[in-house]
Structure formats: C-alpha cells, structure tokens
Image 1: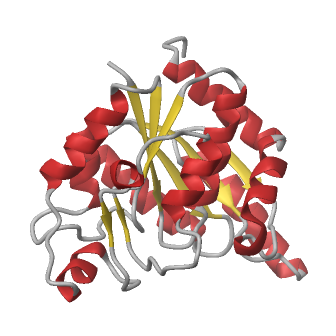
Image 2: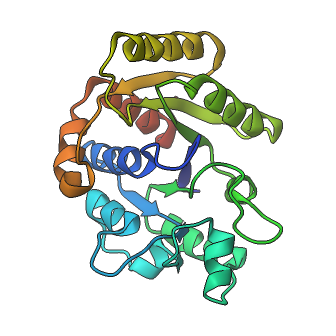
Length: 243
C-alpha cells in the first residue's frame, strides 16, 4: 500500500502549503515518486495561484486538478460553510476515491488539510475525522512565536486521543522576530516544545517575506534548508519503510 502523509496545522496560515511543497520537491529530488492532494480548498479565486496548483507544480506531477483537489470553493471560510454558500455538499466518499487513485499512481501521497484539526468539512465530520479515514500519519505545522506552545500541544493531544501517529512537529516563522522580546519568545517556544511535544521538533524555519509573490523561488531555497533536509530524510525513511 502506498504511504500517505497528512500535513495539518495548529491554525490557518501557519505555512502548511509551503512545507508540503518543499517536502514534495525535496522527496522528488531524492528519487521518490510523490503525489500531492488538497482535498478541499477554500478562497479559490480565478487568476490567483491556488494551493493545489502550487503543490502540483512543486511535485511536478501531471495528475488532474480535480483529482488533486476534489473540492474548490470561492469563499475563504471553513469548508462546510464555503460549500453551503454555493449550495453544495462535500462527500467524503469522493475524497476517498480521489485519494485511492493517487495512491495507485505514486509511492507516497502528501495530503494538505484545511486549517486545523477541528475545522468542519461536513455537518458531521471535521479534518480530524478525515485523517482517521485516510489512516495516514500526520505532520503538524505550527507557529514558533507566542502562543505556539499551547496550539501545538492541543493539536498533538487531539491526535493522540484518536491514536493517530505523528511523524514530527514543524515550527515556522510566520512573522519576523524584530525585537529582543520576540526572539526570546521564539527560543522559549522551541525549547518548551522540544521538552514536551514527544515527537521530533523541526525548525524554526526562516521567515520569508512576500512568499505568495515568489512561492516557487522560496520552495527551492527551503529545499536546501538544514531543518527541511532533516525532515525530508525522516519522511523518506518512513515512505521506504526504513524508519
């Protein structure tokens, strides 16, 4: 069975798409056949690069967009509400069918979630339920600044409560640490999570200004980042069953 790895966040806009794209490119450079998936994407606007398209480019795959991303909605809100706004509904069966098709075509499939674990997808299921259905281990992406400890531990504990394995926690700089206090907060977050997370802690990744405008350039730069190389090596061992 092809391995799947689910990338979730402690919140929205923590860098899930960037981390997933970097991993897709890094694993491909190491000779792995990587597929990507964004089951549900909201805030999709014509003429603006979507997360799913960015993942396809990063992985350099030819899979159809509607397989990589079965559901796309214009409104930038939780998937359940975005679907309701268009008088549509999200069917888990359609997501599972697309996922299995991608599994049949690639050695590993990186699946990027929407927001955090408890973001609703259907009236009865959230992202955490989707992860459980996919039977995929998880990579958690979180912020390195103030609040990062609480958000990361809440996410990790929710996954453990469902007995879902976690491969690593990635800490990302979403804002620049311009003051002495901000830099101390970052160090504190990293140190405390390395003590208490119970999983490998990767990062912090460097802050990159204007990521949206130069996404592919930033991806190429981060592929060579020492922390991302460490994470890529970890996932490569998992995908090849040597971890």
